[in-house]
Amino acid sequence: MTTTSSLTFQPVLERIAEEIARTPGRGRAADYIPALAACDPRSFGMAVAELDGTVYGVGDWREPFSTQSITKVFTLALDLAREGDELWEHVGREPSGNPFNSLVQLEYENGIPRNPFINAGALVVTDRLHSRTGDAAGALLSLLREESGNPDLAFDEEVAASEAAHGDRNAALAHFMAAYGNIDNDIPALLDQYFRQCSVRASCADLALATGFLARHGIRADGTRLLTRSQAKQINAIMLTCGTYDAAGDFAYRVGLPGKSGVGGGIIAVVPGRCTLCVWSPGLDERGNSVAGVAALDRFTTLTGLSVF
Image (cartoon, rainbow, N blue to C red; front, top):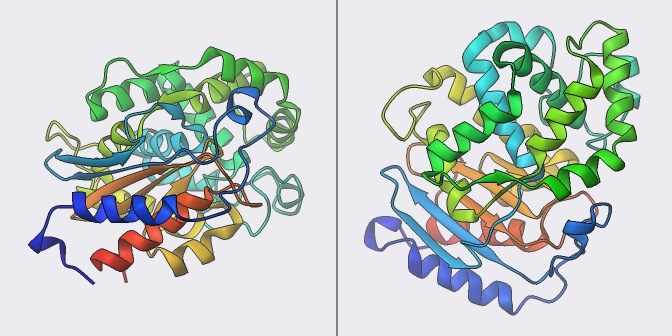
C-alpha cells in the first residue's frame, strides 16, 4: 500500500490503467440504447479530483459519455437541499435487492420506492424537484456545469429520444406511483424530464469535479453551501448501500467507498474529506455496473488505502 501523502494520484492512476489494459473480459455495453450499444467495451478512463479542484486523469478521462443513472445523485442533492427531510416521506433509504427497474417491490410497499437510486425512486425525486424548480433537468444541468467548470455540458437528444422510445417500464412505474398519490406532475412531462436528465454527456474529469461537494461535506466549488454536513453524509451513505443497484454489498466489500454507477459505464465515488473519482468503461456486468470500473476502483482503494473503512 502506498500513502498518497508521498505522491500524487497520477502514478496510481497510470498503474491501474496498465493493469486494466491487461485484463480480459470487460463485459458488454448496454444494448437497449443504440448510442450506448455502439461504445467500445474496452474504452477506459479514470479521473481523481482533489478538494481544491486539482484533477488527475488517465486513458479516456476527457471523453464525454452518457451519464445515465449517475445523475440521480445530483437531482437527489438538489431536491434534498430544497425540501429537507420531507423527501423521505415519499422515498425510502434501504437497499432494494431487486433490479433497478423492478415493479414488484412497489406493490408490496404501497407506491413508496425503496431508495432514490432505483428508477422508481429517481422518478419520485425528479418529480419533486420539478415541482420546486419548474425544470428539474435544467436545474441538474446548471449544477453540473457550475461544479465541473464546463459550460459545454449538454443533453444528448438522441439518447433521450431512444430512452423515451423504450420507456414503457418507467412509464409503468410512474403511473403505478401516481395511483398511490406519490407523483405530482403529469406523467408525460415527468418522463421527459427524467429521460433528459439521464441523457447528459460528461467526462470523467467533469464528473469527478462535479461530485466534489460530497467530499467537501456539502460545500460547492465556489465555497457556498449546497447541503448541510448531515445531508452530505446522508447522500454518501445511500450511495454506499444503494448506489450500484443490487450489487451494492459486493461494491462496498471490494471498493469500500460511496459510489453511483450508470449503464453508460460510468461510476462516481467519494472519499469524504479527501477526493472524488470517476471511472468509465462501457462494458457492463449482469447487474449493470462497469466491469473495468469496479475493478479500477477496487485497485485504487487497495493501492492508496483510501476508503471509508
